[in-house]
Length: 226
View 1 (cartoon, rainbow, N blue to C red):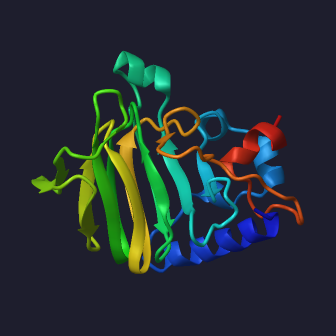
View 2 (cartoon, one colour; view 1 turned 60 degrees about the vertical axis):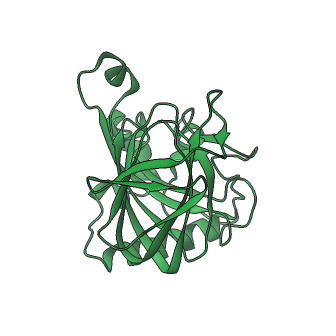
């Protein structure tokens, strides 16, 4: 993706998020220079911040996702069962924009439709080897109510509704009818190692630097802040 496109997506996303009354934390608006000078471990080390991906395919409008990690604990705390064991993200799934089939080995997450169109999730249970079970019935909690769907069934969430996805559950999702503001509340998030995709794709985008970054992405930190 070109940096100019990334900057444009950030501006559009910020306006969309604000339209629902959600206010981003102050560090969201730090310039790259300010983030470099401050370099707070509580932001950089746990990878809080802007995250835009086209999954390495270069077709963001068709295959992509906007994310902002608002808070996140540490894997070592999760391993010992004490400390900050949770994470929170705000995301945008555009109308008909696919976030491809994947699962998490460790993370449990609530996916919440915070507003906009319907959020559609295609769901499969995991096979014994961790792959996709294309036969098993899918069972997931939705706001405390157990829902059952056939393998590959489509769960459609209206604004205000949510689903809990436990580790191993395969899921892909997209917006239907309009762009969707998504909340994610989960156990500690590790996007470097805990995303297992059904197809061989990348989690982060390759950035072509055609202009200066408006704000750094979490995937920029290793290069820009070293």
